[in-house]
Length: 78
Length: 84
Image (cartoon, rainbow over all chains, first blue to last red; front, side):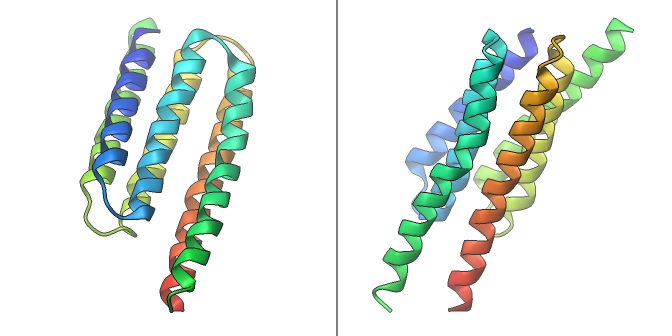
């Protein structure tokens, strides 16, 4: 019970700081995935398992929308 | 029995943190994905091993499917953009 809280704190800190400091947009998405895994672990540790299921299934949908926008924005200048 | 379960949890936590650090500090973008996948596997293992409730397996399955779909979507978009 204690180890999962340590893991959640470490993953959230690593993902958040890296998301702020990294420049490339795809690297930002990867670091955002690390941050989201930390957030899911916080909810699992508190016992909200249904909320954790919902977030884990909705997380890739948001990433897909950001990826569609990135693809359009990078194709237009070429 | 209790001691061995704690050791396995500790190994999963250490692997997750190490792979998160490697994925952050890796220079090449495509080389980040193996570390990201290993981190997701380790987090799934930690979720399954650390909580005693039966719904936990549902959380683990949902997290596994979602994280794999996300990283595969990013990787396929990068390869498509580089091919253009």
